[in-house]
Length: 219
Ligand code: ADP
Ligand code: MG
Image (cartoon, rainbow, N blue to C red; front, side, top):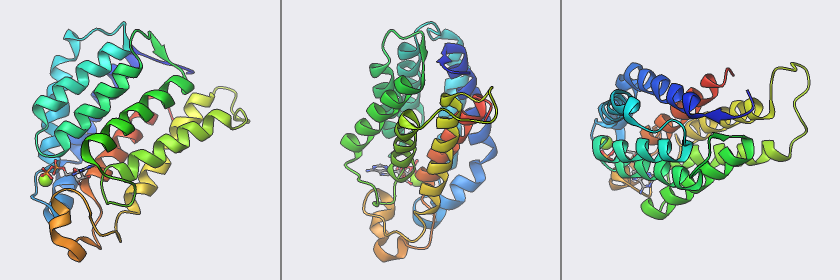
């Protein structure tokens, strides 16, 4: 696979809805430690709503599809993360407007636009112990894959697949690296130094989202 079309994006969302439902307890437990115990239910509710309404969205235009997903997440996830995930998908969709499919370069551009939107809206930087700590290294990994030599070995493994595998790994490493950090944004920041020693729930859900995308591409 060397490009993601509307059907692939829809499959990603379906998979993400399953994963958020399956990992609901984990995400809520992480939020119980440094927040208000709702991140798992927020994410599962949001992605289930998107899954239910997926059929009514335009699958021929990936930009419109991503924007539609963002609108539904914005109105159903709630909490601090709802507007942020809504922004991620809407800004990514804006960048992809009119595209029938996204190759590695287009996907890297889209996710970078989404990351910029999240940072603008939430005013978080890497190291603040938020979803940005998973998303930002994932975008970096996609951009790095653009200039990396074509993957060797398995001829069926495209640069896109390689980039997505690296992005998922980078997001997971970024989420794990939030453990020692002191939160500087969101509810967890109220705890100050007591927020250290716990993994950020939003960085964890973001890592799950990127893992789901890689799995959709078969890696
Ligand atoms: P709430 O904190 O309102 O209960 P959630 O529990 O659904 O919302 O989401 C919490 C997650 O949202 C945090 O773990 C963090 O990753 C993310 N988050 C919170 N505030 C910000 C922000 N300003 N910028 C980026 N991400 C943020
Ligand atoms: Mg919460």
